[in-house]
Length: 153
Ligand code: HEC
Image (cartoon, rainbow, N blue to C red; front, top):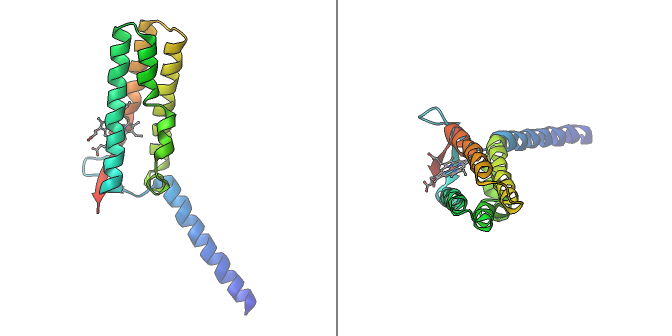
């Protein structure tokens, strides 16, 4: 009797584990109508991420403006606004819905901004900073080519 209960418990545990593992890797996604992977988020989660995205565009704008003005501290300040620190506020429930690959690309983007800020601070030339930025924007392009959002209530 206890033995059977034991196996039922182990079985349920394995099912839970595999659901959690799948969620961790794939997030909550469906194939998008345009060939991209569509991540299903609630309206407020989607609003939150898109708000962050607009912040990323603002960071790119600030970096370009700083480079054009030869102002290293302005470049560093704008780049830092897209850095890893802003990830601290992301709710865990939202994180769980994002596929692992999306999280990797998001992390690469934030650490890239931090590296750009550090490069500006140590006085890298405008040409090098511009080249870094051009390379960095490929991360934006890459993720936008792979993912979009679905809106669920
Ligand atoms: C980890 C993936 C990822 C990365 C990296 C990423 N984005 Fe996005 N971004 C998205 C997704 C997904 C959307 C929503 C696209 C859709 O639903 O069609 C989006 C949307 C946006 C939007 C539209 C916001 C709105 O209000 O509709 C802007 C602007 C944007 N991103 C800017 C950027 C910039 C600039 C970068 C790079 C510095 C960047 N993103 C990097 C995934 C990413």
